[in-house]
Image (cartoon, rainbow, N blue to C red; front, side, top):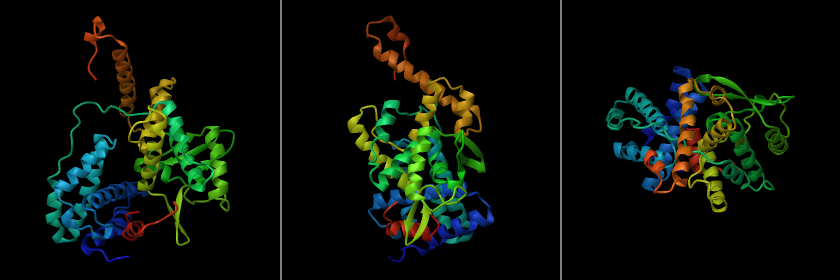
Length: 348
């Protein structure tokens, strides 16, 4: 593996994740993963934009224009303004730390300050898949292979629990509890813990998955449920692995079912499950608890989205000459040098 082009940048990244966040700030693993996701996504974007390897990224490449294009790309790929602003906050936090630890980084921090947070103009419209689309997506992995078995179970568990991708990636074997009413313990934002019931179909898939990937582990093992193996050691699956995997299956599923959107990402399964629960009669308060929302207002987007969906359906079914028309509004198996570098500097 080649030496990094900017030792200052990667040295600060290392200390930010290995010293500052866990030891000085005493941040929870979940919070640290959120910061890692933000910087990992940014670095992956810069690699693609500049057509360079991870170790060739420098502070100079990370100017306000690059950050702005990165944030725009997040929105274009299905994330909302809230996620966009959260990623920006995480990046700003790193640059603030970098400027305090190394005066030469102050100039780079000033670049980040030029990038404004985005203010939402209208309520976020939740993008979700139909039940038919979800079924098609879940059928794409070839469960005769180890990778396909893992991928099917990963997506099924995400949909069943309506969990955030970081919550799924943080599950350990001991978090899945069997019995008459099987449940999984999810560790959410701000170190909050919630218990979510599992469908029998999910439990059956878990049993099959466990025999292949955790045959030697006990029910009380703290081994991560989803992991990759490198040189004999296991590491939790990364957020980027999950996103690439789902995007690939989404492309094949969209060719079979027109209801599958062009871009499929993990949060889409969370939104879809929430909408399906709401449409099948689950009270909005229970949906809020299921999702782990701190405030009920956050969950209201699903009620709004359902109303908007019905409005569009009515509009589509209403002829242009109808008086009603005027009352309707318009519409784990390979690890690259990059993986090694990210582990080395604390990005994963």
